[in-house]
Length: 605
Image (cartoon, rainbow, N blue to C red; front, side, top):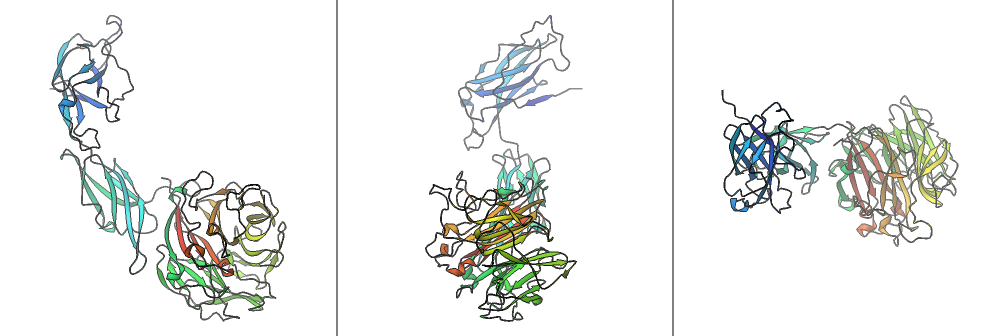
């Protein structure tokens, strides 16, 4: 029986191989196997390109050594290789002990055939032909794949959501990491093996829910591979989010949604993510809109007509939502409006508001901010700061779905100075003994505080334990965001993939202030303090100058040319974790300015 053995080995340019053994034939016994050359490589003399690394194939039956040269050289170019470019090629071989090649391999002119005599370990000499085999590429892989999903956000407006996919050459499968929905229709940006072709055209819009297969044909026209595109869910990171996955899903100017602001303190204040929707509150509006939370498209209007107008129609002063999507709405008990403080609740955006509690307001200036942690049908903590009332807030406890009392506890933490304003408080867990986070315009005495006011503060045991990085420039410098023309706004907290994240918002409310103070920040609490920002929302990072998402300084009222005034202190931020736990949605709103959503995942890719 004849044996035809072809040995193909990829070889690196940095290895040094001899043309014959340096050991004496009398001292070394023949090794098991072919007793011959084990590998061969070649490269064009004085050519430093990375592609200058050619593979040798050894055919023992035909006594041939083929130097495989790509049809296009460099391989990514359209330049066709010709024999006249191979007149001086360095050829080196890796040989077994006691094998002798005559004449020795060094430089060969591969524009024509070359012949050498090779004596193997057994003393048998054979003549081999060495020649260049200019060969078209046989690879037929998808090397890069980006799925472009076209999402409609209004009758005339669309946005593109680009998802990086992961081709597996061994399986001929492209997996698109998309956890929440079906892929639907879309196009793809594809990269292939050099000079391969693909069918059907991936740039065409295809229905990926019906299953899409691509046939990739190699340059040689012979080798082909059928690739299948699948929706795939990668493994999760052990903890926390994947910062590089953060992207702005959508943004909108509030005026295009029909919200134009209005009188002072009659403006947009509070967001409430509930199911597939995001409720956007405007104070005094009986039918606030709600958006598709993934596209930003207006999806409908809620009915707040059952909320009794209380003094200047401020029944819906603020809204928020619990972790299950129940919506909470509150009025304000500012002395100019009402002596009662009320909170209503809704199961979803289409529900009718029903009263959750009423308590004597006693002019405690509550209602400009409202937060809830937990699920009001199970266990929850609800907070409403008393602005200007000696740094205190009201707290209600719900246990096993039962409100413990409509009359709240008054909590007054230590370590805060002047009476706070523009304050928001959110608990870490639905437990009265839990830590909580404060975003307030007031003095703070806490570890890490280098200025006197305006921090996000992590409160432990009812006392400030750590603060966020200062928003002011270091003493004695003029760099950074060193200005007093901003105030604190909302704060939220959610646990995502085993890590707690704090989201806070700071805004410019003065007509002379800089738009640079309209910003959001997300803190990673793994270190036990608020020193680590998880995502870069800036246009440029102040230290390192790395490019961020450009949320900051782009969506405030002043960014759109609208002087914010005092009502600019009304805004909103919310965090929402997808039901499957793969995505964290970060919602932000700047009153009289813009609204948007950032999405980040926890895929281990």
